[in-house]
Image 1: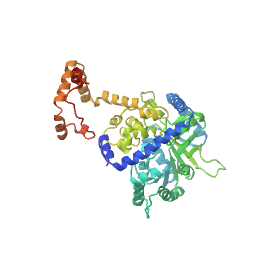
Image 2: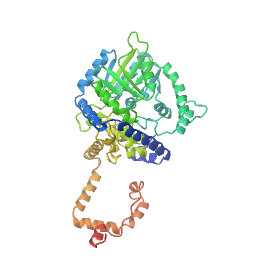
Image 3: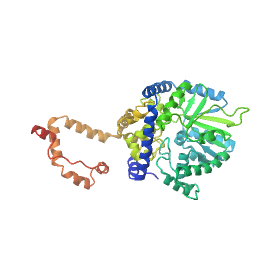
Image 4: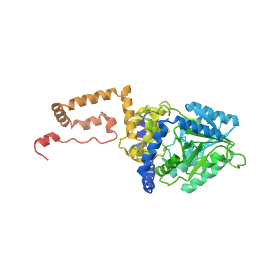
Length: 465
């Protein structure tokens, strides 16, 4: 079982030098590539401003766009499920699998299906579920959640991946070169594609004008999952919508550059209905599950801009907290600054221990996340709002009282000077207090600073500079 609280999970993560090295190498590479990719655009900030305005316009009145998308999907021959929560989404997908007698299920990478715990539901129903994205397959074999929303196995290096393949996937001769590991995975997964009865994917965008689902991947597995099995189910977060292809083009131009620095991702696939008469490829049935799961509750609130997120992962790559702790420290499927906001809002019950509200404290409020966000979500403001929410709901009465007393004392010059003098006189007790375990949660991660012989006020008054 994982540790129960954010502090416990973080302590485990930062004590792992291999984890920190793996993370640092990956996020540094992504951040550098992002800067280079956006630098190729004439006015990247202007595009980000436009994307924020466009997303805000859609989410501000999203019901008509969702309804038009659903109507177009139905007209194209797809089936539509409006899922209020995870239970409804899982029940619908399970029922489709039962109806068609699916025994083998292949999946493309989808954070939405991670969010609803779909794999466990299907496995409990007797279905063999295989993640086919390389990173997702690695963590499925390892029994883990994704550590990054773009690169699920970013926390593992090639030697650790080889260990997993040997222990869980039947690799006989140990191989550690990336090309060799990829070749092994390709061979192992090819049979799963060919035997699958049901393919399940996420959806990066739903385009209302044409009733199309857009999938953005860097591996060919997405196209195999959506075209080889006789039935394809796409799980679409209700906020992941645009009205027109011009809007989709803007987001796609920013998504790949913000995520990995690519001008365009390797595979941008568009699914518009099931296989038609005379077409050789494609599924006989297409089902689109439009997932709410708490999203509509954010519309019209101070947290509504979080619905603009396009899941690029850029905020993770620049976050000083994520860089040290990795994704698993956040306790649910969404890590980093975006996860620190989404988890308390969407998944208070599902997140592992410690109270999801504590995640808002996992931030330096440096603002790097907003600077990196392609749709300019003010993540640091949303994190502060969550902290205020926690405080007003009674989660910080003791802390409020301490800071109120401190403010009252230090607003009076005489008490301020007396406090400084007392601190100087007690400086010799500080190392003793640390050894006795007093303030150990503070001193466990930092050195206790040495205090000077005299206060700044005393030095200033004496003319010492």
